[in-house]
Amino acid sequence: MIKFKRYYTAFRRYKRSKGFGIHSPFAFNFVLKVLRERSPYYAYEEIHASHWEASRLANEKERRNLISFKYAKMIFRIACYFNPSSILQIGSSHGIASKALLNVSSSSHLYTYNGAGHHRKIYETITSDITDRISKYDDVNDAIDKYKTSLSDIDKPFIIINHIDKDSKSIINYLSQAIEKEGIIIMCHINHSNTINKTWNDIKSTMNYGMSFSNDKIGIIVGHKHLPLQHFSLWF
Image 1 (cartoon, rainbow, N blue to C red):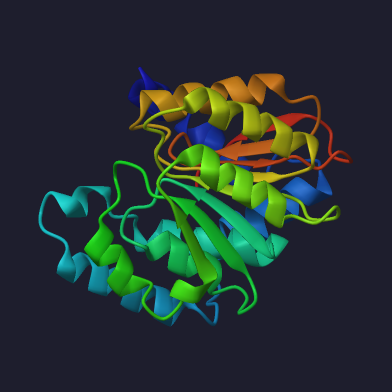
Image 2 (image 1 turned 45 degrees about the vertical axis):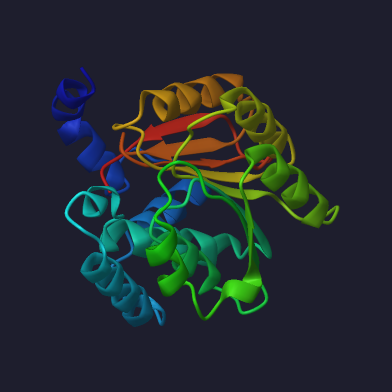
């Protein structure tokens, strides 16, 4: 059903992704200058090297969950745009997204719950030079609690979801709290995980302000209170 919907809406999403029909200055800029930006960034070479190394180390089965170089670059651009000092990652795989996120600033810190999709040896190799900036937790609630205490009163939460394998209720509760604090949420694998797909739709339905952007594979929520409630289905 999701695949059919993507084909059916493809042309409309493609036009919207070019800026047609987007009236919000913020959304127009975010779509064209962040999500679909084609200019090179300083960290692309290092992200590419991490992606190549992870692919080399992974076996055929492990490569199935390997984030694409395209999406790793986009996650980096989103983090560049909002420049969070503290990041929460729920579900880590090979370390490529973690490396991309921490490439934005040498002072940023990542709190991560590994989850069932974690490839420990590959992750440790890819992130070996930034281990002092990563706090790992085996329980998602511990990761959330430690992350919350790391935020100052003016910090806006920045969260990336790669996998949800348990305690989804506590995750959903915190995502709702994060939006109330004008947080940024990135959800990957919307089209491959029923749990993430349901979480994505549940969270969107609770929003009273802010914007969401999705290509039905990855979704981004910008929970800023000055933004009118809008949901953009795009091609990126």
